Length: 282
Image 1 (cartoon, one colour):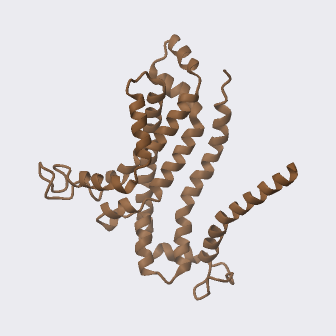
Image 2: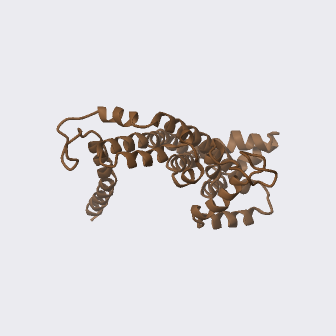
Image 3: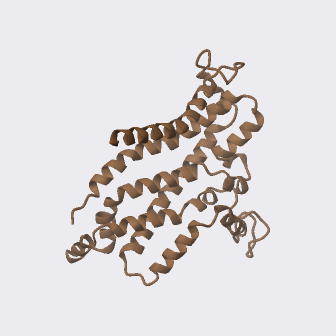
């Protein structure tokens, strides 16, 4: 019975794995298909030149730098702010901690599209920027800037909630012993508790990176010039110009997915090391 149950679980796991891997395998095969050959059959030979052709068809180098800069800065900021907020809600004697947690849980069910409308109005009507007067009208405010592209990704209710739960599960005796030894609250946060939260930090990092890297709607409504376009916007323009060249399109899609895959594989080691480091015996 146990062997049968284990075999059933393994079969389901293999099926779910195949459902995720088959589309990726199809993207790889299509991206390597030579021009003029059908994308429904295996390529006659591997056309690695498709990647060079696709990148040369648009200014993807500039788009990549824009996306990379916005993603790295926004993700790092989100991780730091989430750690600080999570620690404060879990370990500091704040009277409003429960109220803040209730608001965070409420924000988890709010669609991001609803927040974008007031956020767009705010960044458009910043006084004394991009032609705006003292009342925030007459210009474009903070539109078409790196700061605006980063803004929605600097904070996350889910990230704060995850970090708060992880800090809360750590032994309180660690902080008490450090305070007896004269450690400040900043030192306790940075050198005692945070190194034990590597699993949660890795999760928040992956989620933040993926969200910022794959963002399309916010850049679509805030970017005004070609120089500020991200990879997602560049891919849309590229699709409009090369909608029949699926091998080139899939080549660009494959290259765009590599950074997310790399950051996920890189974080796997920190998941493993973090779990070992966080195994504190009470």
